[in-house]
Amino acid sequence: MSVNKVILVGNVGKDPEVRYVSQDTPVAEFSLATTERGYTMQNGTQVPERTDWHNIVAWRSLAKLAENYIRKGSLLYIEGKIHTQSFQDQNGNTRYVTKITADEIKLLGKKPENSGTPFQPNTTEAAF
Image: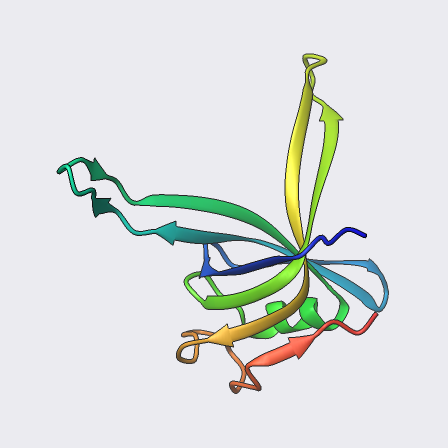
């Protein structure tokens, strides 16, 4: 048995980019920042704050949620699966990109500014 599950809470780095792979199948992509606070160890050593950036992919109803309500700076809770893909760059080097495919997204915090539409529920699950 194996498990592929990721849980992230963080802030959106830029507005989602939404495209349609078919007439009725939207996909949204955006970045999410998670930050671990800095601290001081008992011996006085300073450990600096650390921010990691995650590439998020949302399909169907979650993509519509992203299109309508998620904006740069939005605080999100995301559950999903981690996927890594490899590709050849123009110099022939193998490169890897890791993405999180969202299974659930919850909007946390206050209504995002400039959303353009009334604020809706704070949770949506993927319907596959």
